[in-house]
Image (cartoon, rainbow, N blue to C red):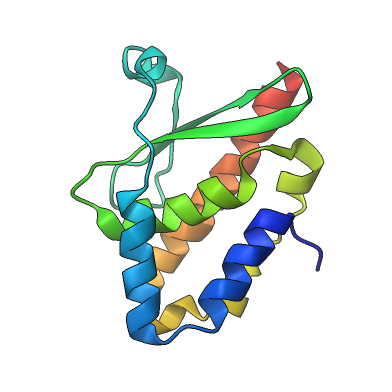
Length: 143
């Protein structure tokens, strides 16, 4: 399986961590989670909801002039685990091409052994976020 380089680096780093290190890393990712740009705050209805997550998660994608996709998320600060997991996808996939994003298999996370640190419910949401990111990327790529 060939993954975008940034995502593969994140996977490789997390895979070798202990449960405690994984949790600390998720918190660090959550703390570095970027704020939603103002232009999307007023037009949240244009953002795609991720119903697989119990936490309210919304996302949108944009394609730049080089056909690279950038994602933006709106996730409450009170949900650090969800923000941390979404950050993995955000940092791993921002700046990739549509082809690179849609080629990421739904089970790519298995190599990270996330089940050691988070519940299956959180992992299901994580997979849902990836699925919606792919949909948003296709929409951005078409527009």
